[in-house]
Image 1 (cartoon, rainbow, N blue to C red):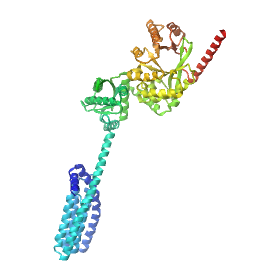
Image 2: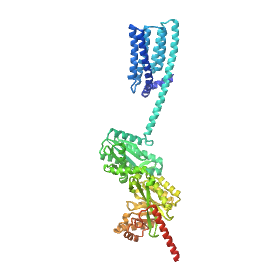
Image 3: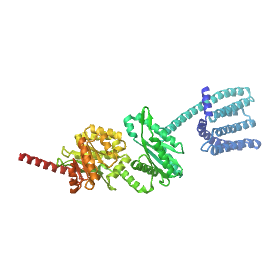
Image 4: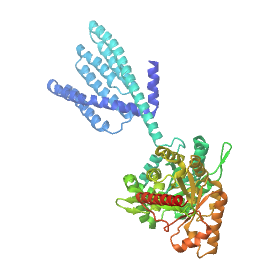
Length: 638
């Protein structure tokens, strides 16, 4: 009993439990009031039939008032969406008082010992319909006390009989009241516990577990809410540069701690204004800046965040550095919905990473058509049968020393149903940006291996790796598995990379290329000389071949400087044991100019335009027949 009183007291003091108690009792009280109203309408009719004069006025008036009060309380007061416990308790007490008044008035006007049983019935009704414990106890005591008082005016036998009945009813009523409320309190506690667990689960579902920031779902819900309200805002996306390599080199524990430190710095900058910060991806964060702030202020905000992130992080004994880029878009001038705003901010981020890495870029409305074209390409990459639409063209690499084709470079092509022939630089860029590059790489590489298996065993195939391929070690592992599954010698496969592809994350790119090189594959540096630090990569990467950019080759006939640069690169490759390729040789005149430089390999239209796999196999077969004939002729001469 003491525990029940303690629990009840706790429920009474706690506003949440008070409301839960009220919510539990509203249907009980409303359910009681409807038959109660009907009963007192019937009682009023009975008084109208049996009573006259003053008795009719008193008894009929009280019963009619009770029926009306019950109906009004049920429909008006307890029909509201929310009823407080205080209001409900007042309704409960008034209900009991009106019921008691009907019996009391009748007994005062027509005392009949047999009608004392009504006080007993009221005590039982009060024990189940009373809202609060104090109101219930008061009603039970009032009913049993009145029973004892009226029983005093009856004969001794009736008095003793109703005294025992009253005592028994008291124990029963008190027991029923406590048991019923205990059951209701248990139900309330169970429901509140379930609600609390649901609320915690919902909070967890909207919170990023690692950083405790709002997660992607929460940020987009907030964004949609602000857009629906019509309030202007800026949406920004900040993406880390170089984080994946740290994760791969030092492990996820260090990576997680680094993310935590990144969040601290971003949160410090966000706290300087009314800015909402959330994590929407592995190393990608969203920023919602309310208000119609000028573009210069937003650009300064983004650059300030990027500047803070550029400072070294001390994680344990390590000093780690990452970069960041950011893209922003404005509502409503740059997008009419949360989805449109995100697309434009993401496109601005892409522009930043492609052209202004480490800076903040605001979406330019003039680029809307370009973005729509990119969105159409991304949708096609996601939805179309790429295995049927992607294909390879092969361009031969010719050895002057061997007077033969030694291999082919595989060139990616996409004939899209609906978009037509899509330029490779465009769809590769979109595939990288949308996270679809792995799928494209796997499909094209499988087609390349299928062609390589049809070529002579002394020929190789060069396959281009994208920047996205060079920041994911699982891609390299997958390519090696495909080579092994085909039963092709690894040294027949050559992977071409560009300076642009490796510069995004040189340490990780070097690890991936070392994995491929250790497995026996060859590595070629494409477009040598087109960047700013190509010689740096010759020293730091496990290269087997260097391809001189065609912009130099085409200037050899007109520029002494270009001729000396190409000659120097060829000589450097010879001293380092690397093969060299001159790209873009198309005419007799260009070939005549480069021949004195003694290049190793030449690739260009002069020795073969890009061709289909069947055409490449046919060319290789023709060359094989010619070489066999030459060998036979030589043997006959001997």
